[in-house]
Image (cartoon, rainbow, N blue to C red; front, top):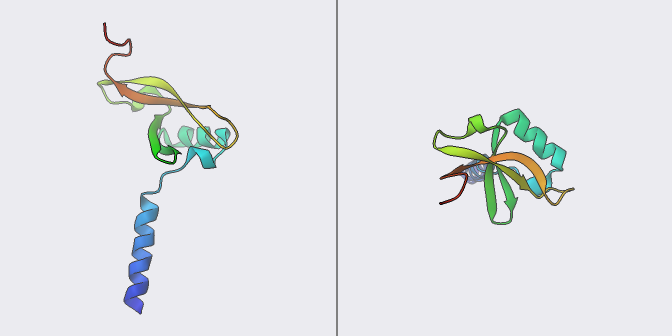
Length: 94
């Protein structure tokens, strides 16, 4: 009985460790505050989507550039949430 309880406890802890904050369960201000406090956050943006948002370009890798980003929140259809890091040319292909 004790083993079963421990297994359930560890499964719960493991699941919580991989949970991402959801933009749709926060207000726009809450999502912006989370990003400002962490600098870079992976957030769920829909049932099957997520993205890594960064507060500024410095959180992107050397070969990446920062692209303005937004996501749906509880109170706003398109909340401005810093940037996402992209690869390739920011000007598209010539």
